[in-house]
Image (cartoon, rainbow, N blue to C red; front, top):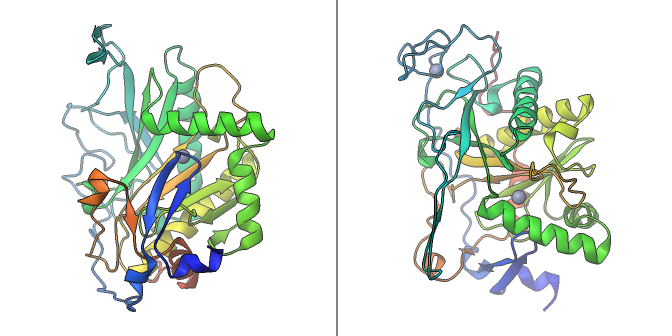
Length: 352
Ligand SMILES: [Zn+2]
Ligand SMILES: [Zn+2]
């Protein structure tokens, strides 16, 4: 089988980051369906919502009043999934009943005081404040003695179960490494021992050579649809320089990250002319006090939409019981994301 056969014949692709496989069925996606757009109105057009617990000056469920913040605002989640003061617990019976306590902290990051913005509608200087807030949180949380993992993420859109359109993300920091980071750490470590380079650095170099799955780029970051993508329009954002965490970004790279996040989310919005839902998040080195030269900073975007603003991909049947499957190839998805205009479909109004 040659690379050219991948466009027509069923096959499976290997994800070297997680060591899992995805089934690709390109013969099922021959029908043309690009361009089905519904021009749905934005989720909200209110710059300030008196009922929103994230808007400046409003009172949250905990009774705390938000400050009149002007850029970003970070606070401890009032309904945190983990707490710092968790009693130690260990259950182990015949390897069949195993449980451990997990202490941690959950933070909320408001990206902007404006209730009606999304990353795609924010300016680069506005997004730079978000990047700075992430860096600060990664550093502060990661410096705490018992925190080994700092997971920064955003759940965007009602389709992803995010009930509040106010632009915000979350940070969960905890004692042990979560499953996804563990898989990557093992793969990255093994790769470095074998090749004396980073897996993602070598992968990025190959993708830059082949050009087929690139979406957009700037001087410091590249957005591409990974060869092994599972979600129809899944992308991987990789730093050109090998950094193990956001805290290693220099001033220029922080602005470049803000820029590429804006470009990425604009392309997503333009694809089906809707405020594109997704889960996105960064993977960074564990904050265990060790150097992790094998780790290469990146972000994953996992959007659920399949062929329009309302038709989403379901992970059911064979995918729940066997392995994930996709019809449209990573190469086609990259082409579509490349082909949309770079400017947002809604004429961007000044945020001032
Ligand atoms: Zn709000
Ligand atoms: Zn990752």
